Length: 248
Image 1: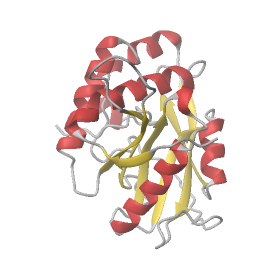
Image 2: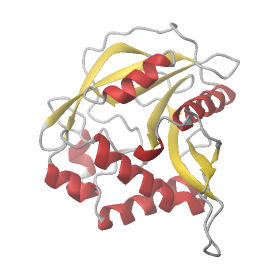
Image 3: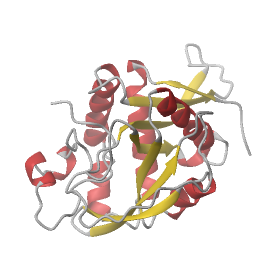
Image 4: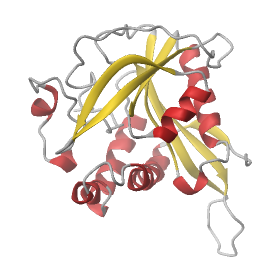
């Protein structure tokens, strides 16, 4: 079922909403995948405040003009309380140049994160975000897009596959105390700003990079230093789930 809503570019005032959506999505999506204690750290009040700061910086001072953050918005339920916003942010997407070593960032894009509030899934917000991302990436000169997804996140993978994405053979591991398999999906972007079903460039990756963010991962909640997160000799990805680029 779809509901009234639209997508726009994120604003500085949206930072708290992005952190709220991110934390809510993690609590649902990573339950049973990420250890309970660690998940509690990543979704607690202190971590939420940190994510809000990071999102604010990412929105107001992105690494390049091609790093984008979009939000899905819908009308808020009628309330009798004054000064309550008439519209609320229920999802977001962040995208920009691809960061894997087998991608060319001039024409290959990456969807870093795609999140919708768990209670608002199934209302068309994910589809609107995906379409808006494709349109934005096409306008920025990208020809293809990829995204890493946890192997256990069947819902996200099925959604992407139904929109014309497909696994390209690349695999990695998210290391958060345990190793969680992840797969990369890939698609082509048409000039009509939509994802073309069935058009996939398949690659074989011999070794995955240790960190998929060329701008380095945000690792504060796990107490991993940035150097350690991106220099592991076994080729695992330190923090695959972080969606905010590091601007330090």
